[in-house]
Image 1 (cartoon, one colour):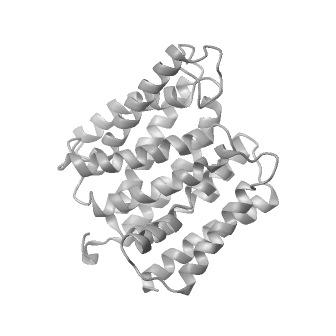
Image 2 (cartoon, helix red, strand yellow):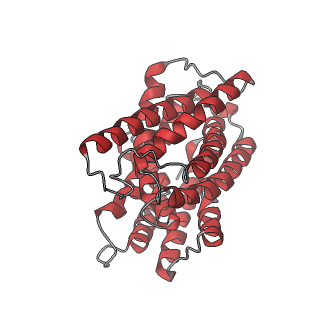
Length: 302
């Protein structure tokens, strides 16, 4: 891991806040895309649309497309791809507030991974934050309610794999360009998306319209403009997320990711008319507070 003298916290904060504004807007469009194409075709389309953008970024000197070390880059791309498949899948079947709440349990998982795997010692504040975040997750997902099912756990699992990728970005891939990391992730997501959508199209039910099970369809034109917006926004947002994690410690950067918990539901209310139940709002606030406590106390080492 890089020495702390190389950290640039102000630049990391600005990068992350800008990324969260973009992501909070464009992720709402997945709900529209899901009415026309399936999850796997969406990933194939988005990755294909990103190719010229990534080539242009490299041409303008924003980083090389070629990793310095393929193995850690694609190991990171694998765990991040799992996270993004789970997260985007949840965006198509639940409100963005619930999907984001699950994804942003990731700082809690970062802490738990550091404790279990890296044998890091933590104090009572961060221990309390873990329980606070867990309670908030229960309020958001509401297990036992009529609307709860196994699929509701998808964004929480996305948060777990996102935590691993966040640690990997800093510890495995500190010397890599943001462009190469993004390109590896998009290449893997695109290949997986194309393969699964074709398999579902050939062997699945042709009449299937569920976002997670739908195969390839050529009736994609209504979704294409939104996929373009998603592709451009994703390249922009993910580039700045990667840069943020490369510029400072994951526990410091994670604080600013919680801005998306305001931007995402805010844009959802404006664009889609989505609203929160009071208890879910409390749960989101608890998850955000847990993440903030973890990040702040991590700086103090307790």
